[in-house]
Image 1 (tube, rainbow, N blue to C red):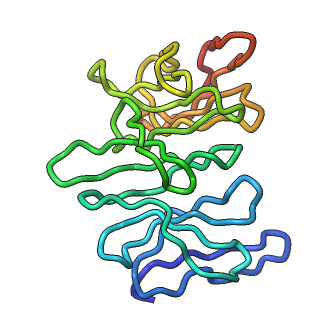
Image 2: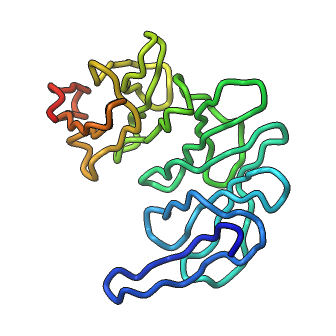
Length: 199
């Protein structure tokens, strides 16, 4: 079609099913941890908002997070399904990343860094958040405790963006600004520590 829609592909059967049918643009889909729902971003209401619908195609689309003056884009759903990491794009402002509850209630919490760097992912145990920040003048990967306010650690050295946790939380992956991929060994408990990045 002339607009984007969300599809679900069955990898075992190599078949695809269209999930959204609205004439607006539907994009940036992310599964809930249990695979039962798909969160996505749509501009069907005029500005890009965060929505969700059952992954099996039944039921209706529901809006879960909307900002009157900014577009949003889903980045990540926490492993416990409680939190959404969302990119925020407002006219005249630097892009940012915020964390909101999965039902959209409460005030969004801004994550340090620059949302244009596609940053923000909560660790599998929900105790830390990794993000790309440019406070030093160069985009680097950082980890902070979640909720914010505890410790903070720089993970990359020489540039980094798009951090992603391994499923068990024992590694953190990221991409450099020159499109090289690195993995960093991580210890989450009893206290956080990070090893040397390996290409």
